[in-house]
Length: 140
Image (cartoon, rainbow, N blue to C red; front, side, top):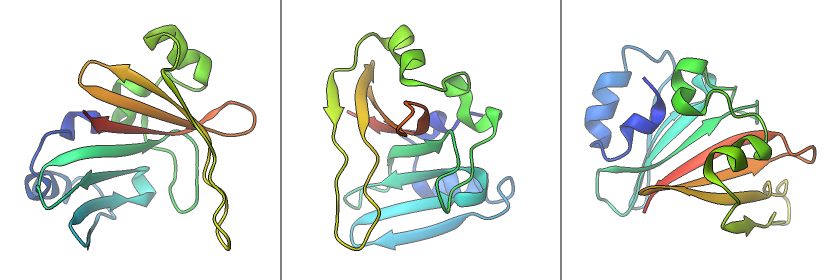
């Protein structure tokens, strides 16, 4: 089942479903946000503002320390996307550019482009060669 299918699901229910399927699954709470992190499986799920409902997820297309690429099954409908051009063919031109941010002492964030698919925003972050590194999905 693709990770996108967990959007809108209670995070504890998702933990219950995934804990026997994903070898290294970590639950983390930071302030009012909750995460299910699976670096070795190439994704994380996020619930914001103490809602308990998954409103975002990140699917890794390429390795980005400490995350490995997600399996084709976990990538779901995004399994054939490798470049920004692939996304533009499916969703049309990006609606927004996301700049790289440089924070002292930390490697810069990757630039990205925002696309929309119904009630989901797709933030595609890419490397210098325009290959996708990860796709972040957010419920609108």
